Image (cartoon, rainbow, N blue to C red; front, side, top):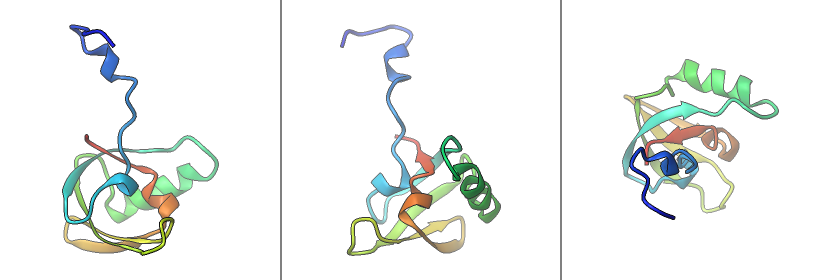
Amino acid sequence: MTYNENHSHLDAMPHPTLNDSQPHVWRRIVSLKTDGSGLADAAQRLADLGFVPHERVCVLRRSWWKAGALVVQVGNATFALRHNEAACIELAP
């Protein structure tokens, strides 16, 4: 890939999701994915809980099972999220 002054080559890169985050590393939420079946409702529920853009979030613990639950902290609150819910939360790289 060649260098592009306006950095348009970066636009194609997908944002990592909460599933990709390492435990005990604080990250910033960029957006919530809403495209797909049932994702709009899940994104609204997550936003109601405080998972909103620019909020800091941290994975505290992961299930031993790859597609299992994650224990996460957003702000001062702690939640357990399913794998598909965590996949809705896009983080800053």
